[in-house]
Image 1 (tube, protein in one colour):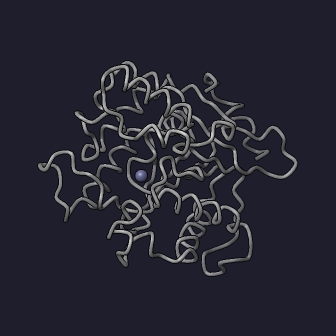
Image 2 (cartoon, helix red, strand yellow):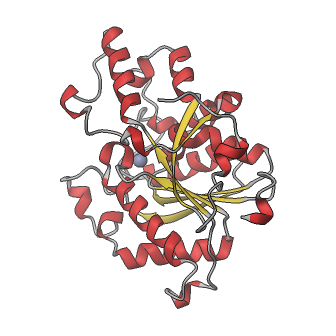
Length: 289
Ligand SMILES: [Zn+2]
C-alpha cells in the first residue's frame, strides 16, 4: 500500500458482486468517487441476474434477461466510471429453496474451487490494490450474495499464494472491504415505510436478522458529492426498477439522503498497518449509524 498511500489516483479497485445492480445501492457512490479521482475501477459480476424481476415486459423476456442485464450493467458502469466489466457467467441461483437453486449452470451448483479460481485469475491479471464484495450476511441473505462473499474472501486470501498454479502469477491485494447494509438502517427505512403507509417488503420479525450487524461497520463514507451519479447509474438497471414497489414509493429526497451514506467493513489489510483504511483516510466521513 505504501506507494499508494498518498491518494486514490493510481489505485486499481476490483469490485466483485453477485448480480448486475448489487454494486449500486451499497457502494455506487464510493465507486464513482474513486473513479472520479483517477482510480482504475473494474467490476466483476458472478451471475447474469437471469432470474431477477422484469419491471416492464417491453424491456426483456425471461429468455433474454441475462443478456439485457449485462447490457444494463455495462451502461451503469459507464456512468460510474468503471473502465471494465467482467462476468463470471453463472446463472442466477434465485432465492433459497427455489428450483433455480438446482439449475446446473447456477452459481449455487458451481464448486467452490471453480469459482475461487476464476476470481483468483482475475486478481492476478488485474492486480488490484483494493477489493470490494458483499458482506457475510449478503445484505438480505440471497444465496448468490453469500456465495460471492465467501468465494471472493477466499480468492483474496489465495491470490498471493502458490495455490491455483494455472491461474497466473501470485498477486496480493492490500485491502478487502465488505459492503454493508447496517441493520439499523433497515429498521429506519422500515419505520419510514410504516410512517408513510407503505407496506414494507419484510416482516418486523426479521428486522433483527436482516442486514449487517451494526458493530461490524468500520468505515462510514459521505458520498453526497456523487449521489446523483450513483442514482443515474442505478437507473440504468431498468429491468430491476419498480417505481410502484416499496422503495420506489419512498420520497425521492428521502431516498437520496439514505443513498448519500455508505457503510463498509475493512476485512483485511496488510499485517502491521494500523492506518490502512484508505476510504476513511481519503474520503469524507459519513454520520454514524
Ligand atoms: Zn443481488
